[in-house]
Image (tube, rainbow, N blue to C red):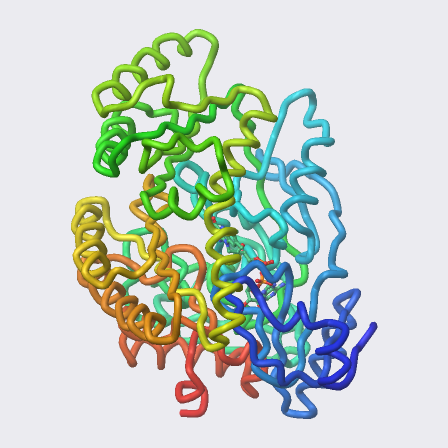
Length: 501
Ligand SMILES: Cc1cc2nc3c(=O)[nH]c(=O)nc-3n(C[C@H](O)[C@H](O)[C@H](O)COP(=O)(O)OP(=O)(O)OC[C@H]3O[C@@H](n4cnc5c(N)ncnc54)[C@H](O)[C@@H]3O)c2cc1C
């Protein structure tokens, strides 16, 4: 296994490993390892354990909460874990077993070339950024556009191999090990038993990636999914596939006002039972994109991106119904970009992808002048009945402060990303305060402070708003059982105070 030693060598030749898309960085790293198999992972963990040195797991580095960013100690990149072991049929579904450093891109391409007895199957989780790696998506329980129909990564994970910090390797199959109430026992290969108390907070009934998954009688596998690398190193994953819809149509409808776009969405959601994706872009998103995209309609200030599955029989009627709704909400088919072909679909999806990308680029430029600044991006979801209240709350606070912002994303799941782009340190501090205020409001409305990105190193205080100190202590107790020396992904999910208590 290749190991780069020394802070200077890592900074000079491997600096990209010291950041993720949050642009957070610390840089005090002594070792960077590239294990090639599970044996290497165990060996490197032993090395870190013996030195009492924290080790951070790095994968695609597309995370936006600093999860893969090392604070100090060692860094372990899983990029050599890139094998796909093939497809098998099990319990009536197709499954693929793959190493955790396989990228979504690599996985999608593999599936396109597979023959499923003449049918087409696919992996429906699409986190927008397809350079993300499978292990990263499992560790953050990532979602993305299509989770409106298909749910988050958790729904598709059938088994995992996980190396614990003491070198024990767990092979966990869904449906095999359950908690008895809130007590969970794991028998380790070395014969010892780990006894875990499942935290007793109530998770919100919305899309959620904040803190450990915790439910009475829960399946052990769910504890590791979404645990942000704090409990073990995932080396292999088995994922289920689903049948690819016959036809998909992708549409991007432009509206003069944000209210028109929202109304269109609410009516469309009722009407179109075949929708797979509903995404919303506000005025702020248009302002960000205009300098890059000359062909965006000049008099439009909001858009809904949606995808629908259709058959040749229902296409005509569906289009007529959409046309009617567009008219009702001050738009038309002429103000809608549509795609049936792969190339057209890709163009429209690229626009969606450009929004977070442009935010990150803008931020990186500001950061050159103000290094302390990082992304202020709320990942809040609330129950449907409270969605409009959350949006009005954002507006009522943001508008008087004149901060550059955009609210966009997964409207289908009442989950919009509120991003503030601070232009200097003063705005950054104001934005941080606002984010905390928004987190408190979301919790009051029965929502989550992180629906898909996780907590990482920059959202601790929001998680505390959500589950209180008591909930965080219960999570930290789980970590202490599985990682007694506290070496794995230190700084993710909890502050040091919880680990040292
Ligand atoms: C432009 C853009 C768009 C995005 N859109 C979405 C979106 O729509 N939905 C969404 O959910 N996310 C989105 N993201 C965020 C990001 O892509 C996801 O969080 C993704 O799951 C991260 O995967 P990664 O391989 O890059 O992980 P990394 O950033 O490398 O790591 C993420 C976390 O997982 C841990 N980890 C990684 N691999 C392992 C492993 N094998 N074992 C244990 N722990 C591990 C890391 O330590 C870290 O804590 C977006 C990001 C960008 C830049």
